[in-house]
Image 1 (cartoon, rainbow, N blue to C red):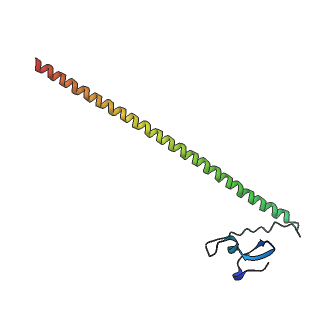
Image 2: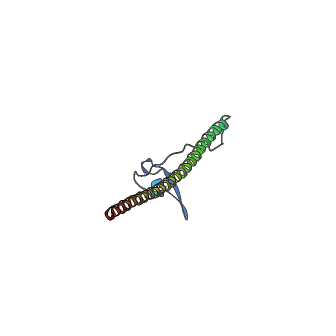
Image 3: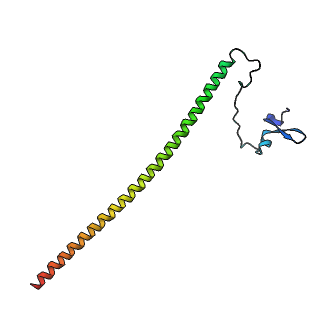
Length: 132
């Protein structure tokens, strides 16, 4: 594989009758400084020429990766639970607001009815007073 100009990453792209060498930016269709590539150091992938410590290195690398995956799963579960909790909280707030409005309307009607009865009683007393 030949290196591309300016020391950028190189990717081989298959063509019908051969292989041409292009830079990563050209292969991905993105040029410029807008793309950032996270490099993953997977130096434990090959077992050719492995020493006696290779298994221990692999095991530690695998353990680290498993912890990372478990953490991602826990974070995902936490997000789902938080979303469900927020939805339930919103439903409860809406229900509470609806009930509060309904009771407030009932109190307002009761107060208005009481006021009308008081006015009616005063009118009735006034009419009786005028007759006598």
